[in-house]
Amino acid sequence: MSHVRVLIVDDSAFMRRVIRQMLETDPDIEVLGVARDGMEGVEMALSLHPDVITMDIEMPRMDGLQATEMIMEKSPTPIIMVSSLTKEGARSTFEALDKGAADYISKNLVASSFDMMKIQDELIGKIKAVAKKKDRVFGLRAFKKPEPLVVPKKSFATQKIGLVAIGASTGGPRAIQEVLSHLPADLDTPFLVAIHMPGAFTGAFAERLNGLCKLTVKEAENGEKIKPGVVFLTPGGHQTKVRRNGLTDFYIEIGDEPKNSLYKPSVDVVMTSVAECYPGRSLGVILTGMGHDGMEGMKTIKAKGGKTLAQSEETCTVYGMPKAVVDAGLADKIIPLGKIAAEIVNMI
Image (tube, rainbow, N blue to C red; front, side):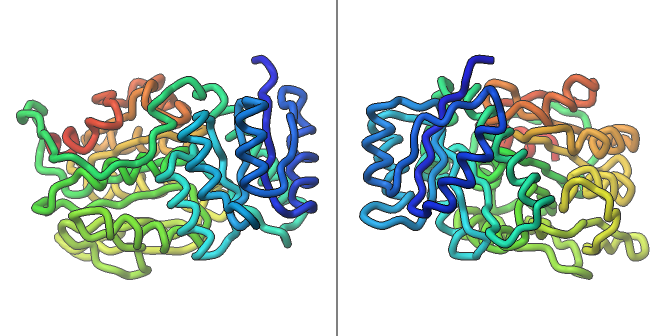
């Protein structure tokens, strides 16, 4: 892979230095320059043509949202937002994704050295991943309000699906928004959505989705009964499982086990519990993301007689999680992002 040329835009000298030091640990990344606010960031983006931009949100003269919008209009470039771990930071981040940003990373200024290493690895991984996709126009389009859903004719022989489990990571916020916003209001099937996202973000993300979708979307709560036609978003920082109470009642359990899991929430943990509670009646959907979280969960869904969907490579921000499922032969269907909502309706 050739050098990935990165522009850093941040009004904090400390953050500019930290991000630069992180990126310069990787020999495949070259820091082209640093900008002190959004206005300078736009000017440097148009003159330097970086492969990827890291963009702070709160800045003087021109903030990160305005800068992102201008860059996407004048010289579309993959942008990774650098967001504070607050609810307001989350809302601004999702707005930036709507304006065309590719993804985000959350900053924690009081992080331990171990956490800083994780942030560094995540940032480098995301920069390299979105750089590979910089010529894919789909990844640079701002979110548009959904058009009417065109549902394919029923063609998939299946029992009635009792629950749909969706997993995603890098690029996931926009992908999940795309899928859920196209689902019709009259669905009586519940959904459980797991995305690698900080706990400070998932509540705001659920609120945002609820405002955009015809179905009710909410952050899942411990002990909450699973209800038809409701989309439950798993909270960040914890593990979420489905539990059974008697023959027909199902509820959500939120805890910390397994503690050694790399991700909280883990898509594998969510999907495995869904498969066990809804044998033969679960549908697993894997969307864009780095790594292979979800592959074991999808394997369990298949083993228990359920159905599986994977997002197609050409529409993924990062073809990691879906690739793991496809390569393992676990995907019943491989579907472009824009058609996944219709296929879910078809399969349930």
